[in-house]
Image 1 (cartoon, one colour):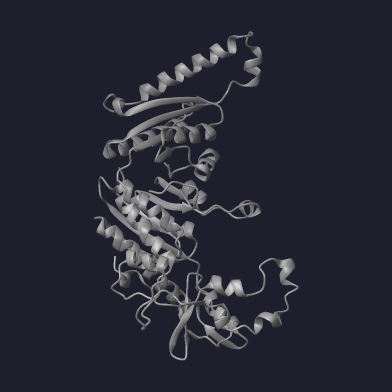
Image 2 (cartoon, each protein chain N blue to C red):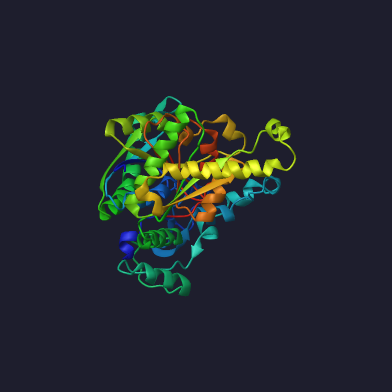
Length: 272
Length: 150
């Protein structure tokens, strides 16, 4: 990529002898901005918001109160600017600029635009994303086997959406159900040693129920996962174990489980 | 599978994190993407007895800057073969996003959840939460950080 397509206009040009406070005010409206500093018609340096902040009063309040405003109000742009900016021609590639930033080679004099390391990183991210295989390969759909009609409808919507995406992407789908533990009253009513058997039976029943939900043509690309415990933890653990790239969940409207999963998920969540 | 996705963006770089996921989700089928930026309504700035700028002037300036940002995102999606449209609107992002989704016929909405932290989380309603709750179509939600990239 040529740098002339990546560069942006600088936020403006300032003279090196101008007040730093005035220059900082100009930069305040453009946090990603960069001022080109001229001195007697020659390029002298650049000034970024970080440079202006570094030269200003301390950011630590207890220190800032001891720094008299008079000390910093007398500063000029020349005191804070970054000298000897790297200069490249507009036809340089982004790789040339990256090399120049490392070796600090300067060339040319006419200022046409500004490219910062942030711009270069943005370009790198875009290139890496273009190279990523576009299709999804692993999905996770979390369903509830609860009996209420609303939940059942929500579960089928999530499952249908997940199966559809899985087919189109040629992906693997993990069908997950997280069971809550036995209530204390039920657990206390069970004879000693039986609780583990009951739990195993519940897991087996849930696994069979999930397997029945999967259409015959999708069984080779779908695996069933049943866990016990906290629902959000179960979903997050399963997503981490399977390396899921997308989690599909039902349970709207406003289910706390969906909200919490979104806040902690390692990948995007599709709430159906 | 849905082929028309409304992507809700902000005026910065944060919302863009969801775009690669939309690209990836739609990759096998292609589709239409509508990029929507919702900004806070402009305000008239008055100093003393002088009006420095009118609301429509500040909205025009904000619209211009956001359109410039959108053009780059749209161009890259078009390069990938998607039909892309974009618009900048002003108002409450929840209401505007849901209205636009309905009017445009979106089959899904994609956005980034910018969750507030601490006390602010309890004081302010989260845009993503409200859209998930009220949207009649599936909502794809990504996070700002701590999440794998597409």
